Amino acid sequence: MGRILIVGEDAIRAGQCTDVYFQRVVEVMEKDGVNPEVTMEVTAAVLPDPWGVFCGLADVVELLEGVPVNVEAMPEGSIIHQNEPVLRISGRYRDFAVYETAILGFLCHASGVASAAAHIRLAAQDRPVYSFGSRRQHPAIAAMVERAAWIGGVDGVSNTCAPEGIPLAGTMPHAFVMCYPGTEEAWSAFARGAGPEVPRIMLADTFADEKMEAVRAAACGAKAVRLDTPRSRRGNMRAIIEEVRWELDIHGYPDVKIFLSGGLTRADVAAYRDIVDAFGVGGAIANAPVIDFAMDIVEVEGKPIAKRGKRSGVKQVYEMPDGRRVTLPLAAPAPEDTVPLLVPFIRNGTVVARPEMDDARERVLSRLSGLADA
Image 1 (cartoon, helix red, strand yellow):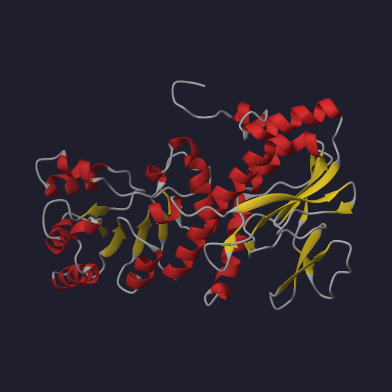
Image 2 (image 1 turned 90 degrees about the vertical axis):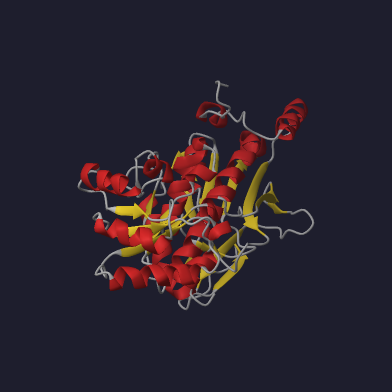
């Protein structure tokens, strides 16, 4: 390891980032010559919400490329429900046992972030939402967090290490304002000095009342004002926003928009979407509850088997034309007019399909309107 405590990609690929008991049992099985052909399925017995978003598959495919296994999965960006198999791996157990920790880590974390982003995107309706939460996570995983948030439906992200193709968004920190003799000097400097592609969004709550700073920022060229008022000082946040809107309008700035950030929850987004023009959401996305996936054997040497609490046998999830789903044994006939949701990604170690980030995002966005009441 280097001086900053992170696990490198080479160690993950080598199976060195794993729970120690996987290493121990592989050693025992090698001594005994035991290495059965198994199929394992990834499922979530519970979800934080009635539905979630499947994410992290791209990293699983990268990890298992070249490993002698078959992988079938729901495409990234698929809407998922509890107890549905979202991914299955078939191969000799010892060949991939040490990767279980990393596989679940990839899927649990990314799916949690993408799911939270999708629910907030739905709550915001037509208002833009931006991921501002990378400072709430270890910087080593910033790219993963922003990718998952983008797949979940945010309109842009703040971290400069986000994957290529994701729009970057940000305004200014309070520290910037405080480095100038006064707020007007800071706002004017930003209006003069920021690149032409940077929206003139001015932070309007550093020292004075939000509504007064908003009007003064508008006079300095703000196209939008950002309210990032700490939760401890908000009081009636809706009243604050309404006052800001009133003062901007009455002073001749009806086109100046209001951007809200600072500890926002999904409930906040739903509550203020009628009077706020855009949202910057941090911890509610970046610190989202993980999807608690488990990875379990369902077949050994072609015979159905499962531990207590799990259903044995390899399965397929079918979607009906009306969106309803049914999970059946893989060997059972597919119901008429249904689509099988688990599709091949790796065959005998060779990648046959790679998840694409923007395809996954479109998959989520295309389904959100139908999930408004779910």
